[in-house]
Length: 137
Image (cartoon, rainbow, N blue to C red; front, side, top):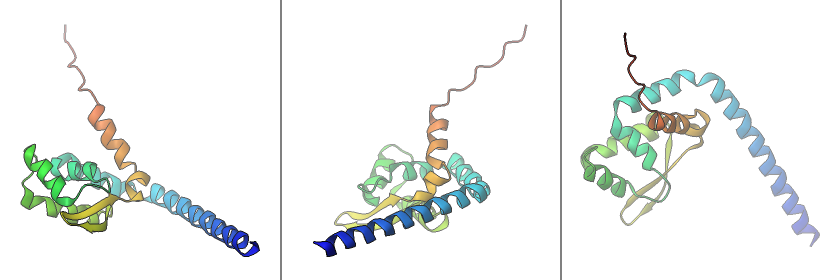
């Protein structure tokens, strides 16, 4: 019994240490990641397919399912979606391949998107109402 308590305490200490290191990394990325954030958001503003792929990645849907969804909605052809996944995963590290299913690869979002507040900026842009034009008298 004492061994299991000791092991539990060691695991808890390791978890605390990892969380503390993660918080420090988040703080550093937040301070120095402004240019990267603006580059990503700029690309997503210009490329609806890139933005939608990112928003649809949830750790459950396969790449094929996301591609089919985008094709159905007329946002992107299936053939171009893999390039969007590559850009998000390799260039920006916003998504990560986690496993393979019968119907394709499954990705999840990484912590970087939250740290850079990409999700928040996209939600804010989506909910933003166009400003009414000023009337001149």
